Amino acid sequence: MAESQEKLFAGARLRRLRRDMSQSQAQFAESLGVSASYLNLLERNQRPVTARVLLALAEAFDIDVRAFAAESDRQLLADLKEAAADPVLKGADLDQRDLSDLADAHPRAAEALARLYQAYRDTSAAAADLALRAEEGGAGAGLSPLEEVRNALDAAQNHFPALETGAEALRADLPEAVSLEASLAARLKAAHGAAVRVYDDSVMAGALRRFDFHARKLLLSDSLTPSARAFHIAVTLVQLELGEMLDAEAARPAALGDEARDLYRASLASYAAAAVLMPYDAFYRAAESVRYDIDLLRRRFAASHEQVCHRLTTLNRPGARGIAFFMIRVDPAGNIAKRFGGGVLAFARSGGGCVRWRVHDAFRAPERTHVQGLELPDGSRFISIARAVERALPGGGAALSAVALGCEAKEAGRLVYAPADFTPVGLSCRLCERSDCAERAHPPLQRRLRFDPHVRGAAPFAFAQD
Image 1 (spheres, rainbow, N blue to C red):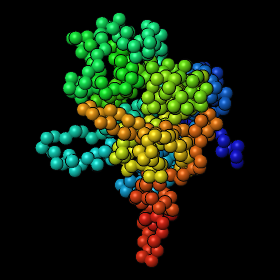
Image 2: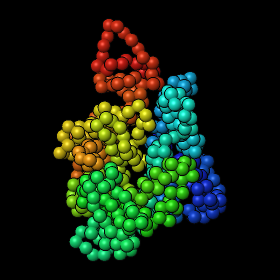
Image 3: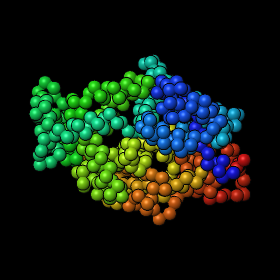
């Protein structure tokens, strides 16, 4: 029985990869060194995918075989579970097995269902506001541009080999200078005739960066830290020198709307700028040598805490893969400004997060790093590393955010961080079925409430378990 449970059936994923490569079964089978008839059996889940086939996939197509060796995509399953929990699907009685089967056998249909539910949810949440502004005309239903971009980054595993190559070439051509910021500024002046100038907020009018094509000047706010100045100069160089590459990468996801594509391109420019500041090979080797100590990496690369955390989520190069990290940035009000699951941890699309994930502890003690072990209801375990970061505001003052970086607990041996224990958490209250949570804010959508006037448990809601 144990042997059968370990067998990997990934027919739908193989078929999808083959179609994405625009190859016939014969061509794909030849690339893997198997017969077309055997590939047909694999795609119909009549044969398990072997280790030899996984190695052939990695060698032939330079892909991360973890996508095949892992179970169904966690974020997709979380999205499907959220959809199935909605009262509108109450009579469907879709359980975890149904959802896993759908994601495994028909991933495109599962993604379509998840996207449809996200659009339905967004439209329902905005219905009252749209009604109030009906005379102005409303925007069409669909995912928000930010959600579209997050989906596209997740689909690419936040790794873009072409941008890494372009960034490495740009970094190699930088002139020698006393600092990286000075090198970037010298390159901007020599290659593009543009000087870097720092101005106060009265000149910048709230902007952090502005490139004046007419005057050939890059204007930066004096509120920026040295690491932020270097980043903004790098973004400008990337925009000027890698523009065609950014356009090509931004055009790849077919489902993006116009606004989302513009936002996606801006995200890619930031990605490439970070790759200039922290070149892949040097950063990967340093991360491994210091066991992913964020403070040491920050000092070694003269980068900010958030810059280092974000860069750590991009180490997915075949043959030189870092730990697979997820990352989230939240403000004191609980708004999520940045989120990347990395295929590691799924996030609830709505309804808030879990209060037991103590990301907000970073605001109470911003001077230290907060390490916490997390355990989901399915038994999977993760390590969360949270810290408060400060961002200067135009006109004075600063805004605090909490940045949490995390990974699967099995990576603990590669990390300098170790949690004391593991806290039972959920994705969100309405998706969590833990009956003993005293901090629950809402009952789960898939369970009926039970009331007993003579009993009050630790949890504020009692609900049926069947």
